[in-house]
Length: 189
Image 1 (tube, helix red, strand yellow):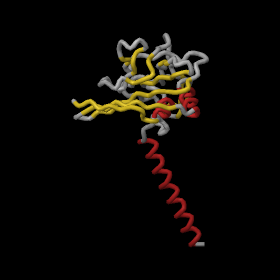
Image 2 (tube, rainbow, N blue to C red):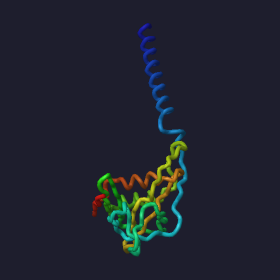
Image 3 (tube, rainbow, N blue to C red):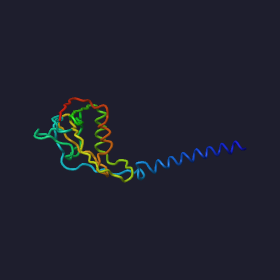
Image 4 (cartoon, one colour):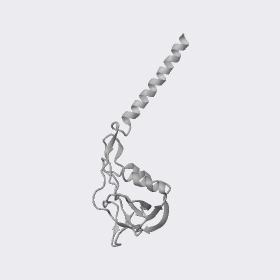
C-alpha cells in the first residue's frame, strides 16, 4: 500500500509542476487574450497599374509606374484585385540594406499553385487575432505586380488586420521559397 501512495504522490507532484509551468507560460507569454477571428480591412480605391518589373535603381523595393514616369514605392496604397483578374505570373520587388549598400532584387513566379495561394491571400477576409496588443511599427504594401495573360500588370493592395498590419497569409506567401530571383542590383552608399 505504501508504494502505491508514494507513486500516486509522485504523479500528483509531476502533474502539479507541469500545470504550474504551463500556467506561468500562458500568463507571461505574448498573448493577452483568447484567439479570435477578426475581419480584415480590404483595399479600396482605383486599380493601380504598373509595369511588370522592379526599378532596381536605389529606390528600395519599388515597381515602375504604368507610364514609366516614377517608381511606385511600397507604402502608397495599392488598389483591389479587379473581379475576374487571373494572373499568369507575379513579380515581387524586395530590398535589403546594411551600412555599406542596398541590394534590390526582383523575384518572379509562374507557379500556378503559388499564384493561387497569392490570390487567396490577397482576398483574405478574416485572420486569427491574438489578444488586443498592437505595435507601433509601420508596414508598407509589398511591391507585388500581378500580370495577366494580356500583359496587364497591377499592384494589389493587401488586406490589413485590426492593427493595420499586412495580413499574415500575404506575408507567408511572399516568404515562400518557390519565388525565383530574376534580377538583382547592389547600390553602394
